[in-house]
Image (cartoon, rainbow, N blue to C red):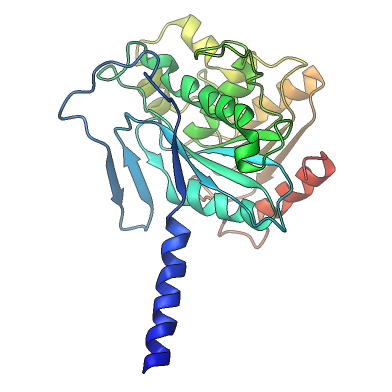
Amino acid sequence: MRGLMVLLMVIMAGAGNMKAQEFVPLYPGTIPGAKTVPGNYRELTEEGTDGITRVSKVSQPGFYAFLPSKDKATGAAVIICPGGGYGILAISHEGYDVARQFNAIGVAAFVLKYRLPSDEIMTDKFFGPLADAQQAIYQLRKNASRWAVNPAKIGIMGFSAGGHLAATLTVHYEDVKIENQERLSLRPDFSILIYPVVSFGASAHTGSVANLIGKNGTAEQKDYFSCEKQVNAQTPPTFMVHANDDKVVPPDNSILFDQALVKAGVPAELHLYQKGGHGFGLHNKTTTDEWFGRLQHWMSASKIL
């Protein structure tokens, strides 16, 4: 009986360690463009019947640091932006689970809990998420030694609307929305987009558009956030995954971005699955193929690993 009790304690401690990742606030002081948070605006974390943990009403952004064991660490790092239509963050299957997979191949992963567009807590809700993504890469570059990260191997990753945020940083890293007195580069060294929202044009995800710029967004705003229109030769190398039967975010989003990257001479790789729908996270259950393995090969070929 005593041996069984010890075993149970070890298992419970291990399970706790899997969840007890370090949370690092993004901003050491005042959050740029933030309003006083109303008393009824409180962060909410819920687990759905599908087992997915969703976070909403984020007012204190930060990231969860998932670090690989020292014997596996490669120095590479990735900031992960969960999706959720800019309304919630699907932070478990598009965040924590993916971070642990990266740790297994020696990559440090930082799950970004970014603010969702809201006039209640932001003076300019259009750029709140982008500011948080820029601040995350700023923090990692500035404090790279703290997490044993190579500041020249920091990438951005996103799923669905989180993919739009990642793509926005990928093309708008020079449009600085944060304090950056050291003038550190905010350019990701690589970008990973999984069934991403890319365009705010004909193939747009209407929910993401409505939540970020509103139903009456201007033509200028739609152009700015149509990331395929903002690609140039300095855009980071990009890896993409989508399913052809995605009815939520049409695969044209990834196809348009891939075409723009190729035209600009930027290294790009796109994997289109026959089926899979939207929101499959790490595992597309319609195939035995694992896109994460393809990503690992791409990262190795790109000298990231």
